[in-house]
Length: 78
Image 1 (tube, rainbow, N blue to C red):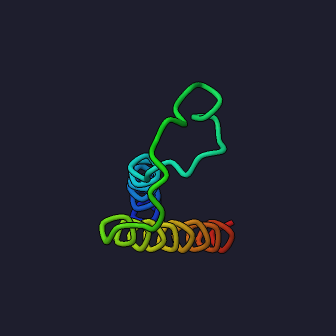
Image 2: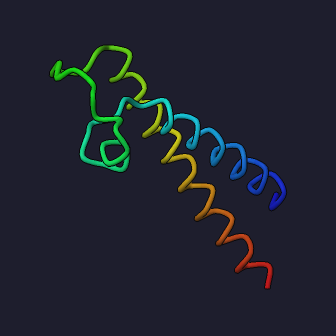
């Protein structure tokens, strides 16, 4: 069971990295400091951006459940 949680943790970690990198920059971060802040100021988020937000939150919750579950399994085993 520990191996299942470890594999799921690695997969959700990689998925979270990919999903966060897919998000559109909102400005004010490191990208602005290096000249990436030249985007247009179109307010509001598209349907795709909102769906990406929901998927990212779901993957984050799954990642958190994996971390807690793995911690409980490892603590119970020792």
